[in-house]
Image (cartoon, rainbow, N blue to C red; front, top):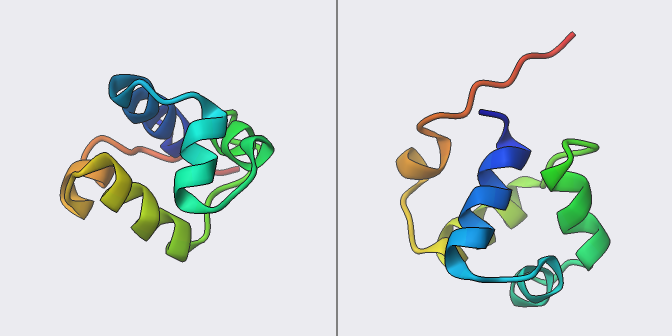
Length: 70
């Protein structure tokens, strides 16, 4: 699973729209959309906010992330 897919999965589990999640963590809806589509990735400070927002541990957040670059 890619990081963007994980963010989208967790967001939907919590019942948030992209706009709602963005407001909670302090980014635009477009930023959330870009993350979910793997256009770009959140900075570390936003990953901290995402983990807190979703109420999970870093291990849970990254458990099934398998990024492939190139």
